[in-house]
Length: 340
Image (cartoon, rainbow, N blue to C red; front, side, top):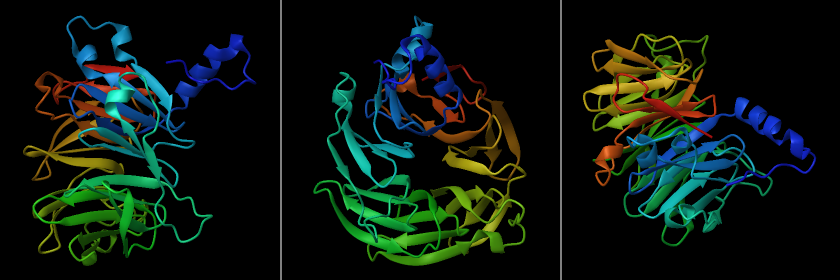
């Protein structure tokens, strides 16, 4: 799909304009399709690109297979976060979330299905939505620049609850799957645990106040978190740390200086990425198992495609401060890169 080019750019300079755009591109978000064969990536220009993982991973793949099958303008500003339901791609930008039908996008019919804006305190407020999280019973949680968590009923499109407690921007969300609980982390340096049944905050961990985690020169902000039952891993300004939630105790401090922007549990490992080119693989004990370099100077998102419908497309993808999405067919090396 041809990208729209401003009229002020002469036709002879179109390629130069697009090259400069790619040079300054940041990919903030990724989401895998319900079938597991496609990957959506959202950038700082408000564009979403859909890549065919099955084509790129084919033994007959060519360079063209690593380009988007479709690219479209989704938001006026950056696409900060995306998630997929069994039929829809949900994308979030400045102040709003939009829905797109996967089936229509793959036919290159990129027309939004709906858009919603949370109930902000003033009509002039347009905060970014940094995180989207799907929760049981067909609900979506949004969080970002207004320091609040908003719960949305996806069946009716209505916002049902507002969870207040953070005093600064919220960067990340994680679902505690065995309990109806959600974790949130933000610029105020706190990880807050919310009970979705009562919409109440039930636990607060101020990570930067623990001496072993604190790194005042990096700030107190929490930029990434993940949870696995009674365990949580989080990082940002403070050190990347594994916590036991029930006792609010830090058990492992991971020895990495660079602030981490994304973290996830994977089998018996923890994967993290942030400043620097590498995807880091950690043992739960804190031992660094491997650092696998990618093509971007900094990483903002990791995506594990574990859809059972497409076992041939089970890959890890990493994206950040470039126009490329690195594809790891195993955790040991980067196989190739997709490119906007």
